[in-house]
Amino acid sequence: LEAKRTRSGHRVYDRELRERTEQQRRRRAALERAVAEDRITAYYQPIVDARTLEVLSLEALARWEEDGDLVLPGEWIDIAEESGLIVPIGRHMLRLARRALDRHQMPLAVNLSARELHEPDVLDRIDEAWSGGPWEHLTLEITESVMLRTSAAVPVLSELRARGAHIALDDFGTGYSSLARLARLPVDILKIDRSFVREVRTPRGAGAVRAIVSLAGHHGLEVVAEGVESAADLEALVDLGVPRVQGNFVGRPAPGIPVRGARPVPRPVARPRPLRRRTGT
Ligand code: C2E
Ligand code: MG
Ligand code: MG
Ligand code: MG
Image (tube, rainbow, N blue to C red; front, side, top):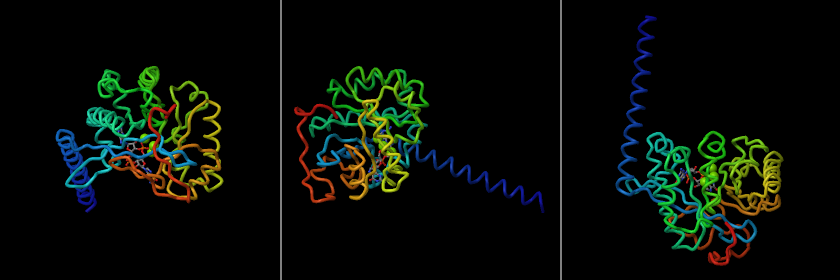
């Protein structure tokens, strides 16, 4: 009886593993088709002035069109990275961002993955995709953990910065950068992770946000809070001196530029300023 039970347990395990591997393989093949058939598209989410809600720039977020649905990156970014499909996808996103800049006259932010940073010709690919666009209107977002883990990140991002592009540390506060380390990283912007923003009205959350704002001040970095979901959170962030925010409450990701975000408080939503008068992101 004992042996039989063990064996059957084994069989169940094997089958589950096989099914999972098979499902992964199908996912990857489907993503490959989506890339080949140009069904990876960009949504744009505004980054706004926390007080005036004026749109300052747009972050390009990848969407996979499948059977009339949009599949969110959370379901496939890992597969894209493992398979290397993130490389053509990233280039495509940068091309789309370049076009969006022309169309909307807004600075753009694009996410960069670890895998892309490890490509030996990453800079050439970015140059090609950005095709002579104004570097000062491009921000490349890289998660704090990738920055700390990826040896290729620092020289590549330093070079992009030398060209005039801005570098943002995404999901900041979750990767445990030391202060000393942060000072030496090629970074212009800290994006406060949603997990802190979500609890900004608790002492712990407020403390974290306050610490990041102060840290940014010391290092001359800009701050953006991401994932702002309510008027109360927005107000708390303003009180803590956060100058820029992003989140569903002030503007959801959309295929084109939002004319106005959800309006939290009775404050006028300013129209986007044209690029000419802009001094930074
Ligand atoms: P991220 O760069 O930190 O982007 C912010 C994510 O939070 C987006 O999810 C956005 O839709 C979501 N979000 C914005 N406001 C709110 C809010 O108020 N509440 C909540 N709960 N969520 C909010 P999305 O578009 O699903 O993307 C997830 C992640 O996938 C991104 O996180 C980024 O790391 C990655 N990603 C997206 N597009 C690309 C891309 O083109 N290339 C690469 N390498 N990664 C990408
Ligand atoms: Mg991002
Ligand atoms: Mg982020
Ligand atoms: Mg995030």
